[in-house]
Amino acid sequence: QALEIYRANTALGALAQAELKRILSFTLVSHVGYLVFGLAIATPLALGATIYYMVHHIIVQTTLFLAVGLIERRAGSTSILKVKGLMRAAPVIAVLYFIPAINLGGIPPFSGFIGKFALFQAAAQVATR
Image 1 (cartoon, rainbow, N blue to C red):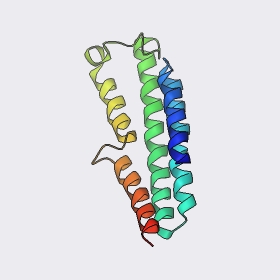
Image 2: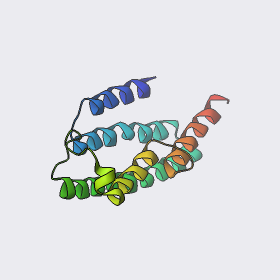
Image 3: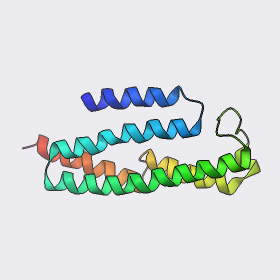
């Protein structure tokens, strides 16, 4: 329950932002909760899932920050209020941002889903003992 409160607070913080870099910073902090969750379970499956999720998160979050750098270069801003029409103006950059973003959200079949699923599977195993 504490994990859900923590995630909700950081998600609300992200929603209040208009700058892409700040939004990504809030999501980075909120996903640390998954790592703490896996460490708290402390089973071999949970620790393996935590390591997997950590590597996934580092790669995806780095990709998103690099994509935001490309957006800033192309649009001249990272404000979501000023970056409208990016799909039409720079479709490749838009896709380079969109794919890691849905991955971070844990949409199947991406690695974010696999990591989150493994963490919750580890928690379910502990709960059924």
